[in-house]
Amino acid sequence: MPQDEFVLYDLRVEVVDTGRPMVCSHRPGDYFLVEGENLVFPETDRFSMYALAALLPLLPARQRPLQKNDWMLSDSLIACPDPNCGACFRITRTKKHIFSHAACTAEAVCEREDDAYETGAAL
Image 1 (spheres, rainbow, N blue to C red):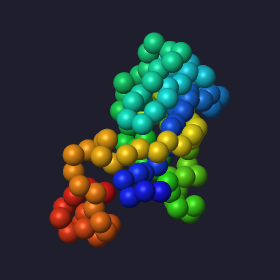
Image 2 (image 1 turned 90 degrees about the horizontal axis):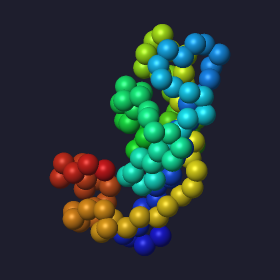
Image 3 (image 1 turned 120 degrees about the vertical axis):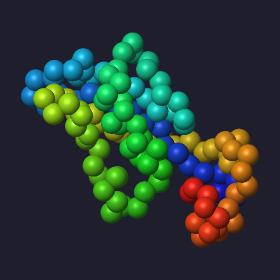
């Protein structure tokens, strides 16, 4: 892979029925997609903002290649943030996309991973 390229996975985030009552507006099978930096709602016109707020921090990490023993790779079922709601959300990787660093940011590519820590840049 050229120096300028990196890989992200597209994701599918689907409402899963756990057998417990769902007290939020979730419906089993409802889903949205993550394609690059975009959230895509192809079949539903609504999604709980509270559930979305709980899911958002996990999505960028789940998009990236992970080590096989990383819990982020195996733990793909996320509980609804409402403790009274029985819904869960399954995060599934769908396909890989290759992105260009130059197309995503104006910052220079770090030559070494250590450089990002030394300069205070985020990885």
